[in-house]
Amino acid sequence: MDSPLKRIFSGFMGVVVGCFLLWQAIDAAHRNYRLEVNPHARARVESTWTSSGRHSSRYADLSFANANGGSLCHAKGVTLGPSSVATHVGAWIDVAPIPGACDAPDAPTNRTAKWLVALQFVVAFLAFAGGGMKMAGAPLPFARFSAPRRFARL
Image (tube, rainbow, N blue to C red):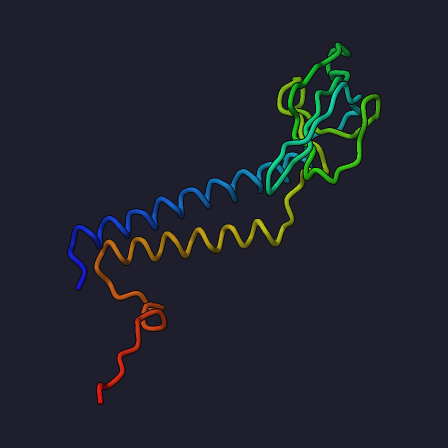
């Protein structure tokens, strides 16, 4: 039998995990929306590098013309996507900056798959629901499948 404090804490942790996953899903959906709606510009790659680790990514410093004034914009550390994105210094790539500004350009190669965004929303909802039910003391509908099995002693 769980103590009420342990039950509330574990339920709260489920809600926190749900918040994190919801933030990830909203960020990915918002980036995909900006890539579809914002006007695109051609940017020149000034420098490029990759991060190391299990999920390495490719980054670049870019320069592109501002759509409103024609001035030259410089963006540092733009995420281009996974490390397999093929680009080099001097190459021209497509970006979608915030209209009328030089801030936060997004590269179409950094788009998140729609099924992955939907999966993030579903898992966030399940974490919220499970955490809320646990905090309220309601029995979880899937808890019977994870309960240890008791066998009769001989």
